[in-house]
Each structure stands twice: as C-alpha cells, then as structure tokens.
Length: 517
Image 1 (tube, rainbow, N blue to C red):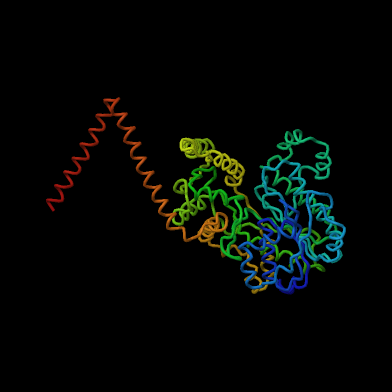
Image 2: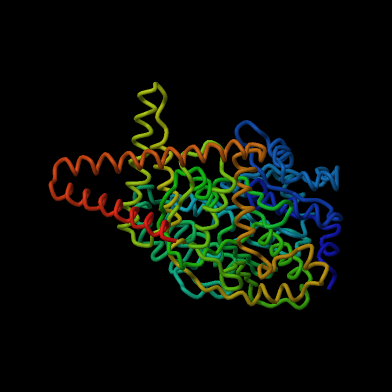
C-alpha cells in the first residue's frame, strides 16, 4: 500500500462539522501533513450574520493554524466552504453544490453532531441520526467516493461493560422512532425519553448508537468505517501541545478547579479516566480512511469499527487526574483565582452532596452577598449552578469504567509504515500522562482563557495572598469558637488549662534536656 500522504494526493475531501473542535484539528492536520491534497470541502451553515466563507476565515485565523500558515502560506486556497444546514432536508444544499460534491468527492469525514449530553431527544435525533442518514444518502450519489468515515463515540454502547469493535443492534428500530417522533409533541417525547434510552445516561449516547446501526443498515455497497473516541481532550503534540478551544467536557471542570471554584465532585478514584488527546483521534481517523480506501478490492463486508480509547492500553485513573490538576494549577495558577486549587473526588453521593453544599453553595452565597453590599452584581451562584449541571452530566462517566476491545486499532497501527507512524502517531503507549495533563491544564490557560505566561508571577502572588487569608481566617475562627465554648463550659476550661500546662511542662523538660547535654 502507498503511504498516507500519497493516498490523499489529488483527492477531494468533504468534512462535516469542520467548525467544531475535532473538525478544526482534522482540517489542519489534513492540509499540513498531506500537502498534495487537491481540495477540502467543508459543510458550514451561516450563523450570527456570517456566511460560511466568513466563518471558515475566522476558523483558520486562530492559533491552531499558525504552524500550517508558516509552512504553507496559501493553504486557504484549498478550503472550499459549502453552505449547508444539517437540520434541513437534503442538508440544505443547493442543486449546484450537490452536483459539485457528487462529481468530485473521494473521501467523506462525517464529524458533525450535537455534543450536548442532555439535548432533547428530538434535537439529538435530528443532528445525530437524521443528519447521518442524509449524509449517507448524499454519499450514495457520489461517483468517485472511496470511503465514508463516521465519527461516533466510545460511549455509544455504555450500557455494556465490555465493548467490542462491532455495531450493536439498538433496542428500538430507528425507523419507527423517527416516524413516531414526527407526530409526538415535545412534552410527550420528554416523558418517554427515560424509557427509550434505558440504561444509557443521556440522549447523546443513545442517538449515537442509533446512528451506527443506521449506517450498518443503509450503507449498502459503500465503504464505511466508524471511529469511536472516548473523552476527547487537548492535543498531545500537534500542532502544539495542549491546544484546546472550548469549555466542553473535562476542560470546563479543569478550569473551575484551577480557579478554586470547584472543590469537590463525584467520581471514583479507581475508575479509569479514558481521556484521549484530540490529535490521537484525528491521526487514527485519517489512517482509518487511508486503510479502508486502500482496501477497495479486498475489503471486508462488515463495517470496520475502531475503538479509539486509552484505558485498556495505557490506563489513567480519576484519582491521578485530581492530583495532576491540583499540582499543575498550584504551580502555574490561573489569574484572579477565587480560592487555591484543591479539588477532591468523592465516590459516595451523600458525602459529595454535603461537601458540595459546604464548599460550593455556601461560599458562593457569601461572596454574592459581599458583591451586593459593595454595589456590584452577584454572579458566583449562577456560575456554581452551571458548574453543578456540568458535573451531573459527567458524573456517570467519572464513576464507571469500561473495557474496550482495540484489536482493529492495533491492526491499523501495524499496517502503517515507520514514517506514517511518526507523522500520524496514535500509539498511546507512548503517552506520559503527568506531562500530558500539565500541558492540558496549561492549554486551558493559554488557549481558552487567553492568559499570557508572563502573568504567572502575579498569579502566584495572588495565590499566596489567598493562602495567607485562608490560614489567618481559619485560625481566628477556631480561636473564636473555642473561646465561646470555653466561656460556657467548665469542662472545656479544665481541658484547656490541662493542655496548656502540658505544653509548658513539655517545653520545660525540653529545655532542661538541652541544658544537660
């Protein structure tokens, strides 16, 4: 087989979801590492008064594309924005654009999806299932299509403990569900949703499983492969370590911990934190398209599924995540932190609820009260409420572990040449978690919060100030409580005098011993 860049040479690629986190990284990596690619068509809808081309211009002007800009100044000429809306019939493509795609596209990467875990079922079905169906219908018309890659999630079948690299049949026929949702009102759908999703925690994982089964049923003779990443985090190496551009998933939790807002969350210390760097996922996705596209004459009848996970290969646990977050943000603090970083994981829901009230709700109420007294708008309680919602969404994933079979991913890596393994590296055995977590946390500081490293001395000084305030206030509080207790209890006074006299006796003995020596 030819190597990966040679395979992509003179190919036309179509990407849905190119303005999303993974889509951006895929776009950048394809253009940078496959320089002879002919064109990359991206499906983009107009938004906030911006047309598709303007949105893509904004995307490629971010820090992610700086390395590509330096290596290939004219790379933007290969990007063709296509006006499209995945929630509309026929993807809202014009007849002209449909004709262009049908005549030219060789490879499709379907990355678009809603990543809101608690999306109403109708909306999740529209974006994750019906959009996939329409993308597949368009792919069937493409005259030169070699491979269709669908990006799913490793948690699509999280109702199972062992997840193989196969497509599992869902409990409900997706066709019947689509027809039923057409006539149901939103209230009825909301009532039925818990029964429909069953043991799955949310509509996201449920609809992703339906989309996979839809692909299996409707792919026909198309060459389809599915990539299932677990919890996608900041970049490991490419194009820069620690690149991240959003608060989604663990990133928002890490920032809240770094700011000192998050002090406790429900998670099992021993549960596997199946984080996977975004560049690992993208490299595996590009390689999966290369392998399937190169096997047109000898391909298997079954859809190839790749579980792109780390837990079974290089496990990392939530207890270790907690330690890395606390250590990184104490050494390299975020600016204007609310408190010193010190997040604690608690597996017991009742204990976690107690500490959530003590360490989150009460300080937020006190701080908002202070803001009101000083004539400012209270904001901390709103932040805490949003944080609690985010933690509730992630609770299921931080409290459970799964076993993923990764034989196909291992096979894919074995098929690659030594040079391709370097350029499109997704071998997570080489991943050093402590270093990765440090770069991840620093990435949230640099790329999400836009904080310069030159501000670290001031941030450290602010953190030391918070520490001194905390120690002083805690000491005063303990003394006040004890003094009040002593004033009301003869027994407490006797204990106090006994402890003080014992301390004096110990000091006298220590001095006498020192003199004798």
